Amino acid sequence: MENTALEGLLGYIAGHQLKDGDALPPERKLAEDLGVSRRELRAVLASLEASGRVWRGVGRGTYLGARPLKFGPTLRGLRAGTSPADIAEMRLLFEPALAELAATKASWDDLLELEKCARKNAAAKNDEEWQQWDHRFHLLIGQATRNPALIALMEVINGMRVKPDVREKTVAQETRQYFAQQHQAIVNAMKARDGETAARCMREHLLSVQGRASARVGGLSDQQV
Image (cartoon, rainbow, N blue to C red; front, side):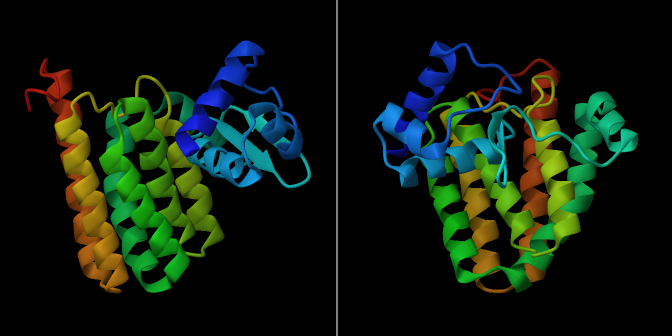
């Protein structure tokens, strides 16, 4: 049902010619217009928010595009001028430590939601679907730390990753399946409260993503890697 709600919402956005910065209708009205439940709509909006395609403010509504940065000119410049290699290097330093901390702090609900993301990634039939659940997976690990500063940094990283020249595209189903298995390995380590293994699995995953991206830059598709 989530895929139906997603298709309906994307069609609504296209049909009303909405663009980044435009507000979506209130949830109740939007769910009625789309013919879906509010629960289904909220799940889709959460996925789109994790991938940086919408943002929601308490008491302010839901808006298209990435959340406006409130960290001053330094981080605004970071988002504008950072290269894919810079982001890959930053993620290698940051996300394994994030996974290690999250392994000790994640609630059972966090772990179930991460496992759901890993399943959705494994079932993704195209890159667009993969990206939605991949971004949500990595953001959820940040949220599982219960550390507002770390969560804010992870939101910035996710926001930078949605840029067209930065996105780690997955063309081959085999690639998506492989990355999904790595996601599940991270979740398994977190469920065992094994922070060291969670960090190692996250590092291996990011190195795999970086390796595929480098191979594409060198002229190979992920079908050939």
